[in-house]
Amino acid sequence: MGVALRPLLAEYKETPGWEGLGGVAAVDAFNALYQFLSGIRQADGAPLMDGEGRITSHLSGLLFRNANLIEKNITPVYVFDGKPPAFKSSTLAKRREVREHAADSWEKALKEGDEESARKYAMASSKVDAFVIDSAKELLSALGIAWVQAPEEGEAQSSYMAQQGDVTYAVSQDYDSLLFGAPELVRNITVSGKKRFRGKVLSVYPERLNLEAVLTGLSLTREELVQTALLIGTDYNSGVPGVGPKTAVKIVREGTFYDRIGESENAADPDQLIHYFLDPPVETSYNIENRSPDPDRVIDLLCGKHGFTQERVEAGLERFGAKKGQATLDAWF
DNA sequence: CGAGCTCA
DNA sequence: TGAGCTCGG
View 1: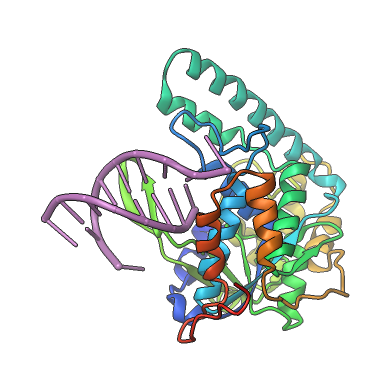
View 2: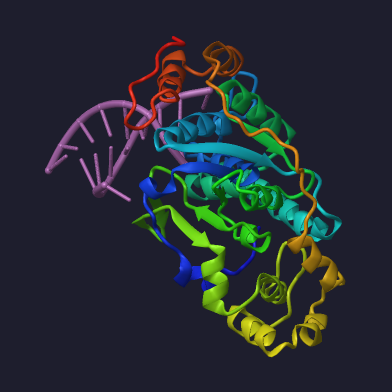
């Protein structure tokens, strides 16, 4: 999931605060949905479900997160992955294996009455499946929030839209958007601002990475940043054994990328992967205009079909009209 | 994850 | 932007 560039990028991250993040955000839908599925769970690890056993954690997450974004003058546009490129298959197979093993461990922990482990394994067993994707699109449409179907990688699509100036920045926890050329990437765009880490509670702030600042700071071109990532390893290749972020930059700066990338166990042609990052397949025709929510449709879907409490949904919906510094729009109630 | 409550 | 808790479906 993403690229292990973190150590190289740490010193370029800014924390603009919410005021500095107003604009149109291209949100990595897979990334957001995975966060909701893994995070919105009960103590024993069970996700929220409707009366028919369908998962609803992501629907709750989408309703309230989008309410928050809109209140902060951020207009979200969700970007969904299409068909993964062939060279991603081993990463996807590995994720599947990890997920299925976690599901077994979850069941086992439950039998042993170990709730803490159960929850941990349950989180790792999360799967963004067709139902999750379709129901998310349905809810977004009812909420009047635009979404875009990418032909292949969503992060490539978001990056294209940001390069075109149609969105202000890409939102994802992963760093791949920078490789795909997004001028700005925003991470940690959550509201709670709290995260448990090794037993301690840390504050988490939205952080922004500017591609130009990263490239200038590292004295690399974007193609060289891609080469650096390939040496470390990406979703598309396994990287060169023993080469971490620092060594990778050194190799690229020395101009010996093509001598060293062959040591990777991966068979993929490095030029093909470089080209994929620099010029990926994207949809160039898209409509990202947001509309007002359709409250009846949202309530039908969430309350009628999925058993949400009407009061809770209405409370969320009301916030969609209320932009910061603006009177509440209750015209549609 | 995020809402909403309690205690501070 | 307080910390800590429970609950949501």
